[in-house]
Image 1 (tube, helix red, strand yellow):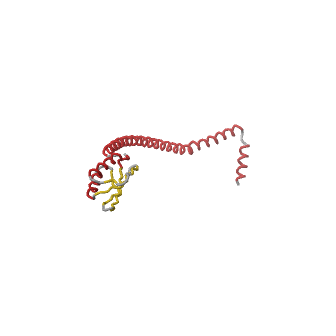
Image 2: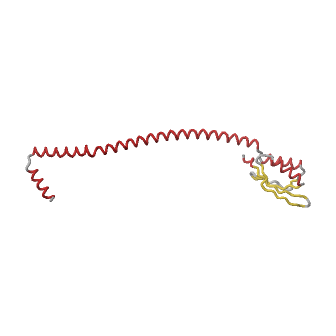
Length: 181
């Protein structure tokens, strides 16, 4: 079937003159170009324009988000510097209110003398921790603890009370957080 059609078409073309063939080719090419121009090109251009609009929208959104991010970043930086200043001020105030271990040892020595408590062991000083044993009356020791804990960042972490030769012995572990400031 198709072979008959092609055969007739070929016979028809061979029967035409060169001028008619040229006109026929020009008409055929113009038909192909008009199909491309009127049927294929508009959807391609429409898709291209939609993509361009989408790109512009994304670009505007990106620029808006970028400016918003820079604004947030700037506010965050200002807030961070304010917080840092407040933190350094607080640390300075804490440092003024706290005692290091040497000041605390001097206070413990004064309290031992004033409240008639005897230190019966060496005082172990390790970073924030002090370990030692005291001996004396219970009332004096309770007053000693009260005065000691009035100091900022000084805590009695561990306390053992036991009797030794008719007197009370107090094994004390003090945590001095002011030493690390």
